[in-house]
Length: 80
Image 1 (cartoon, rainbow, N blue to C red):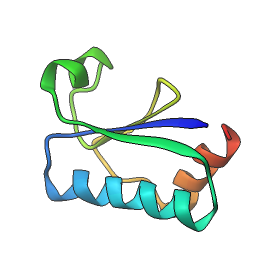
Image 2 (image 1 turned 90 degrees about the vertical axis):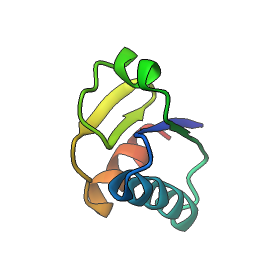
Image 3 (image 1 turned 180 degrees about the horizontal axis):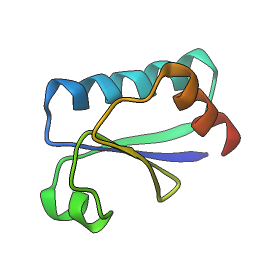
Image 4 (image 1 turned 60 degrees about the horizontal axis):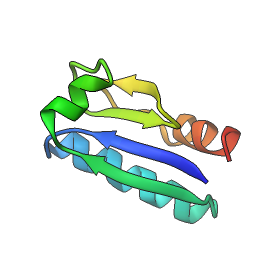
């Protein structure tokens, strides 16, 4: 199972990243534990200062922008 954390306080781009993660996981049948992290202290514990940010299996993959669908798929499938 892939551990996915979406870091953000709830802005529209954070919501879009969360939606993308759920959609890609469902579309490609990826077993993923997807959770939204909104607590500022927890977000900062990842070393992230810009949101949205995506953490896959405890590794920050992107911060401050949205990945493309294909990039997100690559990150989730490679770690499946």
